[in-house]
Structure formats: C-alpha cells, structure tokens
Length: 136
Image 1 (cartoon, rainbow, N blue to C red):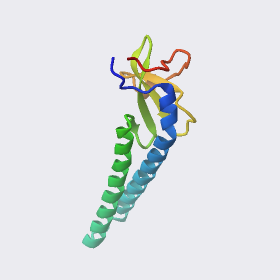
Image 2: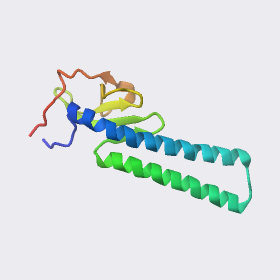
Image 3: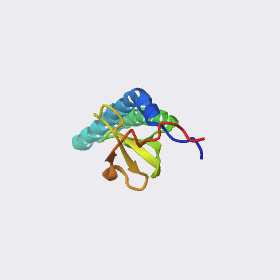
C-alpha cells in the first residue's frame, strides 16, 4: 500500500503553513473579485483604464494560483478558496482512503469524509480509530 496520505499528526503539523498560504490566496482572490465587480459597475470604456484593470486582476489571480499551487505541492487539495476548504488525503481503517477535512476558522483538522462524499458528508474524526502510522 503506498504512503500517499497524511496521518492526523502530519495534517495538524502542516496546518499552520497551509492556513497562511490559504489566507493569502483568499485575500488575493477577494481583491481580484472586488476589482472585477467595481469595473463591471463602473462600466468604463477607456481602453487604458480597462487594460490597467485587466492587468491588475490577472496579477492578483496569478498570485492566488501560486499560493494554491504551493498547497497542492504539499499534497493537499484546495476544494474551495472562498469557503476555505482543504482536504488532506488520509486513511481510516475500515474505510480506506478518505479525506481529512478542514474549513477556514476551525482550530484543527477534526473532520473527515469519504472521497466520494465531499464536504456534505463530513463526520467528526475519532482519533482513536484514525490510523496514526503509515502503512508499509
């Protein structure tokens, strides 16, 4: 069985850095969204203004993407930037491969769901059942 998942301890230990990256991504995306909304409402046809706004939005989204890519390189899935949802591939005996689920504002990774269920299927993690060691 491959070791391509997080133990609960590994997920908890990775969370501070991932929260920082996700927080930056959320802020950058929020700024891009606000800029797009502003320009839609303003409706300027000035090509210089539009080019400047487009460049600013593209930069903000590029920086958002860089943060998300750094999270993905850690092996964690960003499910929703706006809601702040991260899924850590995990393993639970009797369930197999699952996702350990964390949402912005939560103190720690405390939920899981089957890979086929998504956020709606979140269940509280019972650390006594959760695999704390990697399989070899």
